[in-house]
Image (cartoon, rainbow, N blue to C red; front, side, top):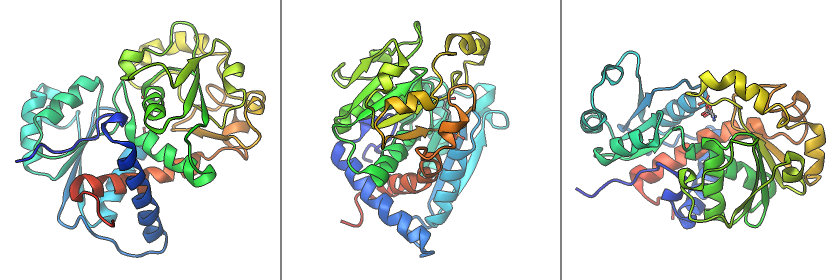
Length: 307
Ligand code: CP
Ligand code: NVA
């Protein structure tokens, strides 16, 4: 049996593979919008394992699998043996013998790596402490839909150097764009944890206004990610000057778009005038999770179809 392909971090795929995925995303989205049935994954089963909360990821994977003709099963830590200490390697053996593809949302990246190395079927990262590759897959597709190629463009990341930030940084290496990162002191990018090949595709700015200057895309995320709740009070203080507001958006290019993976906290990392304003593409961004992940599952299960 050949080892299955996985999508555990953004750099697992090549630029050419992403280009294929985006082509398929566009086509799959068109089918969905015109109510055309497309069931290439009939009789295939997706298992979704959640160790953290979710709205978009669960919904987009579950609805996506159903729309492709397959079925999806939801497992969470609370009511499965996963929460009672069954070794992840054993869970991987069993779950991957009963399903065709697995999506996992968990804590350390190491957990999903261990699962994948014992899985007979493709494993997709639905968010770990380190990465959120499905999010950036949808985000880059959304940017291309609105503005065309992202190559050579500047993305301003304002806030925490978290899983979503790390994934933007990996994507910058794959697609050859630049990221201007501004975090409060003590929350800077850790290149090794971000899984970067180098430091060529990003620059750090002490002042978030400077990071936003001339950007084509401004993006941010919650100040306290899941799993870090104990630091919430401290983070509210530390990040107070890192809110994306109207003044900050005016530093960016006039046609810059604003993205946020959601859920958002208006009045914390983003002002309502920005997320609910004309430059915001957050609803397209959320919807595109559905279409992009359908293309991803099609690719992992059937290879490059439609060529
Ligand atoms: N953006 C995102 O992954 O949202 P959920 O936490 O709702 O899945
Ligand atoms: N960085 C956030 C993203 C949520 C989709 C978290 O990990 O909680």
